[in-house]
Structure formats: structure tokens, C-alpha cells
Length: 244
Image (cartoon, rainbow, N blue to C red; front, top):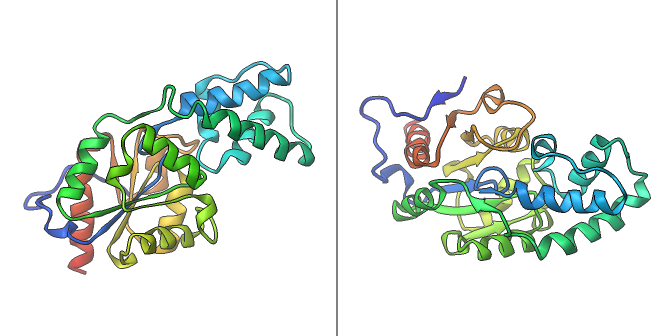
């Protein structure tokens, strides 16, 4: 069962447990609220096919497994399932459109920047571990002035296998020169939870992300409701690892 992010007596987030550790973060729905631009682009595709748009609530759970999967699920939800040979052309149109509108409305979740700055100041290495393409991820991070905070960005095209495969986390950790034994995964959905469990790293989930399964039901080690809880939660988990 997930524990509360509030620390028990005597546990501090003074950075001792964080020096040299790796905090691997999912991007969409965890670090950045990208749903308006992603779903806006999906609805643009649907409109081009004469199909009514999906609401944010309907389409939000489709985010997190890559654009192809989002497109397939989106068309299915709109009662217009795609033949396999139609997916690639629509995917290419989606990427071209989305890249030019990637940060129209997307913003970091409240408190995210301050939390990442705190983690960096306490000696942690930060990496993005996302099923989004690496180029799109870096474009988004650049647009939001977040790239300066990360030691590595490892997207779907820069790993042997994407989340929930544990090799994605392992590749992200290696890219920033860290150790899997001193890593915490921070995400919002089942892909993150399954990858973390397979990689045998502690798992923090946010309660406000994009998931069709409530985050608490995914049994994270810590569930946080806001980013101001993240540094302490990481210190708790890494301290426990260090003392095990």
C-alpha cells in the first residue's frame, strides 16, 4: 500500500540521501500537463476525418504510451477504429502538427520547477524517462525552460524497449551516469508502475496524472498530491534503500 508523502518523525529531506541519486521522471501527466496540446492535435486529426472531437476527460487516459497508441485509442473511442495501414500516415500528420503546437497550452504542474531545483541542489541527478519521442521531449522541455534541470532525456526512440519494459529506466539511468540501485521512478500511470517494479526501483506516483487506473490502486511506494512533497518523498525512499 502507498504511504503518505508526509514524513514520519525523524525523517528529513536535507539532501543526505539524495547526493548522487537518480530521479527518473515521466513527462506527460507527471512533470508537464500536456493534455491540452496532445488532445488538441488528436482532435485536429479527427476533424480532418469528419469525426467529432473528444473531450479532455475522455482522451486524457490515452496519453502515456506513445502517439501511435493514442491515435489508435482516440479513433476507437470516437467509434472510428483504424485499419492498420492508416495508422502510420495519421501518426506522421500528428507529429508534424503537434511539434508546431507543442507548448501552446502545456505547462509544468504547479510546484514542479521548484521541486526539481531542490532535488538538483541536494545533489540528485535528474532524467526524463518518457514514451514520447526524444526530439519532441527536448523541444517541449526547451520551450518551457526545463532542459537546464535534466542530465538526460531518454524517449521512446532512445531505448531498447519502452516502458513498461524496465530497460527504459535502465537506459535513462545509464544516460546520466547513475546507478539503478540509487534510483527512484516518478510517474503517473501503469506503464511507470510496471517499469519501476520490473526494474526493482522505488516508485512515486502523482495523484493528478493521466491514468485510467487510479494511482493509489497501482500501489506506489509513495503517492504525492503535489510537487512540494517530492523532495521529501525521494529522500525517504533513498534513505530506506541506503539503510537496507
